[in-house]
Image (cartoon, rainbow, N blue to C red; front, side, top):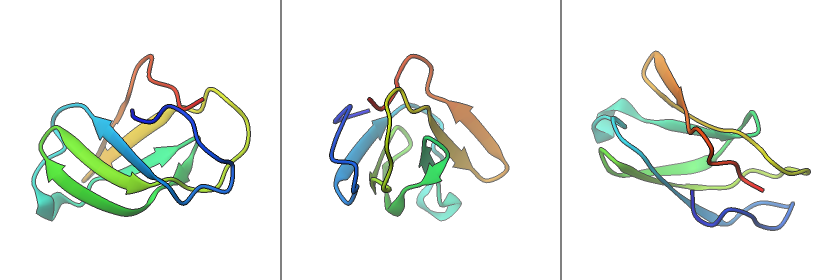
Length: 79
């Protein structure tokens, strides 16, 4: 996850790298601390970009849903 932190009002780009994000038609949906990112852009099977949601606090878990499956990004917290 890059960057690993940002302003609490959100609205900035977040790049998430991983694997098995599927194809563009699968519409992966990332969440930071349980809040959905907005305007998600599929770049490849291993990279997606989204606009960070508003949020407060630290050590927010990042989860990406692809279809009916989701995966935690272990040890990659948004701080």
